[in-house]
Length: 435
Image 1: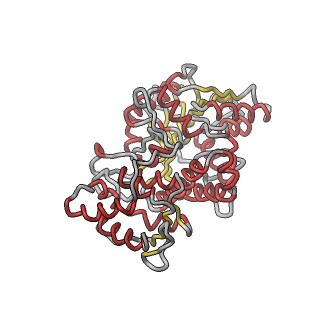
Image 2: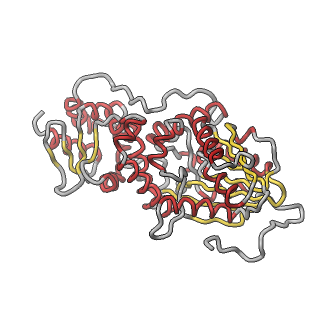
Image 3: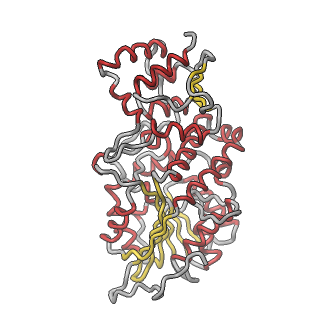
């Protein structure tokens, strides 16, 4: 097994058909690869077995979550070097990057390399996936029951853990930055931006769909005097939000429900905010989602839909959710191009009045969350598990790079249920949201 790193580097380049952009340090202490490049550390041969049994992104992700691989340098630099192997997609296809070639390990021309890789990996059955992976999924995709289980997987991992990552604002969506702002200031600016776009007035009824830990409804009730209802599928979020509301003395103006948006029947509302929730709805249900929110608004009522978007691909039917994200982060989550979202909102009857792209703001937000996680790493591991902490570190850092490289974006869409006369209830001239 001497010089395992050199053998691995040569095999990887043969299998992938391209030079490795990182160095490798193997379990035997050997190193090989481009001098000065970020070093990918393989702590255990078991990581190779994961790749052999599940070639591609998911096998590599399982090795990461299990602690069998890591970078010994800046995580962003390492992931940036590996982007072409992991997440870059060929134009017009739904496939992954160069690691997708590993799914063709039966290629006769590669059999010799595969046999040597099997020897390096050592004997053994496929390792069990780390327990942080969501594997048991029952029921119809995006049915209320299955959606609740998926939400619980991601959000019911401990409010103390989320406090560590998100900070005092407890807002789990893109902040709105100015130079020199703190994370808390930028999150407050985002909440206020949403309230201004919705033109909230004292006494208005606001529905916040996917209310999280209650930050939006608290801000709207305290600063704009609304009567607010927040709904979530997470019991832990709801309990936390209710306590915050009680502590703020706002129980007479804010209600938190554990409720699916499909089951809300007490409209009409003056305004609806949906911030970072629509990614969970799914393409097959998005028309229903848009129609439900439209039906809950009074004529002239406004919707602010804040949603992550992916870049379009040539063959939309071939689009696939990233395997790591689906297994470990947002089970059953789906991203759509912003044009598709706007079209479906319009089909539901909405008039789209404003769209603001804030992609760069999410990259900065995610880097702050990663910094919080790294600074509190020991506590994060104690509050959840080593695997869960590694899931979050990888997902947030990789997502920050995806926003920076324009692989994904995030948009705020303001839409109105116009009255029968066609009056949208908005000023004749556009407003400056930043004022």
